[in-house]
Each structure stands twice: as structure tokens, then as C-alpha cells.
Length: 462
Image (cartoon, rainbow, N blue to C red; front, side, top):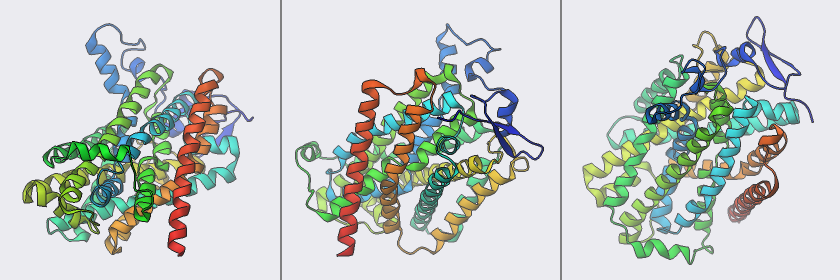
């Protein structure tokens, strides 16, 4: 098994690799823009961890938390929210059990990502390269970029749809959003960008309000836990999309790179895990509230209905929540999800490509200090904006993107599991019954996803 190599900076900021087990201070600065690499808690308290008062502990939690919350709020992006809306309108509460069953998979996958980021101090693409070679690394990152391309288009499609609700032309709403996302990422501070991201994502909590206002029938909500319409091909398609909407390739790459960029250390592991677990429950709760809203507002009152545009989804909210209330709440939630999703997927692609190409890749750098990183980020946003302006069928695109994510699950979870088993220091590797349980959980999730994808392909061929 190869050792974990260590990047060092040359005169141009490119990376070379030497056989060192872990990264150290100035070597780390080649990518992170900071010569300090220790616990956030230690760096803000003169090298001594803060203990004692509840205010000190709360401060530490606030400093460490972020990567897990951000990536989970981005998980409930425009594409996911559209898929959830369609699921509730078409099949009522039938897909709620699936959302709940996916929580353990989401927690397990992202917790392994936390371990890898903290104990190896490397991004996911770097680790795949170091352990499996350049070929596998480029394959993995290429599939990541493809998934990110689909995701960024879906984010801007959602933004354009919100704009149309209020009479704003697609080109204007998309252009403004693209400029906003570029400005947010180029502040020269990881922390500032993270705070912006959390603030954007919190707008998604408006769907808790819409679910309450929709007044769902609790008896109807419980029925899917005893029976499922598995014979319905449309249900199978949405089930695949829902799996892809929850476990997405960019999440693993983003959180690991964000942990490295934020310079979390082993002293921060417990808070980082809590950050991830809390985020996992929050994102699935939001998905469930969207399903409940459209199930109660559409499916219960009108029967099964397909929502084919963003405007139709907004109208479905408005019909039963009030014209202004429905549109305002839906617009706030979808826009928040789309913006944080656009930020995260674009950063993920830039980080992933930077890891393989040896580029400086940190939000701590300004654009002039890491031009390759910010160029990748800008190109991703530009691609998504242009395609979203011209693509005519947004809902179909959103569903297709989530199906693509489901198809990529075996590759993503496979690499993650092997790295967690082999690349971590021995005391932090997954072992024994936990390793077996996570392996079975991942295998089950991938098997179900692939089975449903195959059924969808067979149906398309017919």
C-alpha cells in the first residue's frame, strides 16, 4: 500500500509529491493559504484549547461547525426540491419512508468523509490518486465534474424559474445569480464564504412553514409505511431520482476539501461529526416537508398530478397556501437551495480539478493568487448559466440529473469505503462490525439504486 505523499510548493505554486506520511505547516500553505494547521480551537486561544465556560465551548462549536451543515443544505438544492415537489404531487406521501431510510446512509458516508479530511488532510481526489493512481483519479474526478455540470445547470434552471414567477427574464435572473455566486466565493476568506452559504441555505427552512400551512392528513402520511406502489413505473423513476437527490457525488468531495481548507484537526473530530449528523437530519427533514407540502396541497385534494415547470410547482403552493404566501415562500426556499447548491457544486469541481492538476486551491487565496482554481469555478458557473437560459424542459432535466447521481453511487461509495478502510491511520480506520455494517448499508443502497436505474432504462428502451 503506498504511503500518503505530501505536497510541496514550487516557485510557481504547482505541486510536487514526496513520500511523507502527513502534511506539515508551510507545505500545507501551498494549497491552503495558511502556515498554521491545527485545531481551530487552538488557533483562536493562543495554542491552548478553550475549556470551562459554556460560552467558550459554544464558541468552539461555532468555529468548527460549518462544512457538514453547508454540504447538507446544498444537498437540498433546486434539483432535489423539484424532485421532492414532483414526488408529493404525483404519489402523495409514498416516498417519505425512502427519505427516512436514506438518513443512515447519508450519515455514514459523510462521517467517513470527515475522518478522511481530518486525519489525512487531503482532498478526496488527491487520495484516490495516491492510492489508486492517476487513471482512477481522473475517472473519479471526471464523473464528479459531469455530475457537477448537471447539478449547476439544474440550480440555474431553478433560479430562472423563480425569476419567471415574478416576471423577470431568464437571462437577467440567471446573470444576476451568476455574478452573485462569483462575488461570494472571491472574498479571500473561507469563513466568510461559509457564513454566506449557511445564510443562503437557511431560507430552505420556509418549507417547514409550508408543510404546516398545507394541513396534511396524518393518517394518509402513515399509509406508505405499510404499502408502496412499486408496480408503477413512474414511481420507480421518482424513487431513483430521490436516491440520487440525497446521496450525491459532490457532497463527499466538497466536505473533505472544505475540512482541509478550514484546517480542522483531530481535536475537532467530535464537533465535525456532530456537524455532519445534524446536517443529515436537517436536509432530510427539509425534503420531507416539501413532499408533505405538495402531497397535502395537490395529491390529497386533486389526486395524482404531474408538475412540469417551476411555475406549476409555485402555482400548486399558491392554490392552497394563498397567492402571495405560496409564491413568496416557494421562491425563498427554492432560491436559497439553488444558490447554496450552485456555490457548493462549483467549488467542488474547482477543488477536485485543482487536486489532480496540482493547483493552488483555497478560498483563503484571492483570485490573483490561485487563478486556476477560480477559473475552474467561474467556468462551471458560466456553463450552468448559459445552458439554463437555453434549455427548454427544466423538470425533466432536474429528474435526469438526480438519476445520473444514482447511477454514479457505486463508484463514489466504493472509493469512499476502500479509502476509509485502508488510507486512514490504523486507530481511525473502520473495522469489525461497524465496517461490515457500513459495507452492507452502502451495498444495499447501491444495489437498489442500480436495480431501479436498470428498470428505468428498460422502460425507456421499450
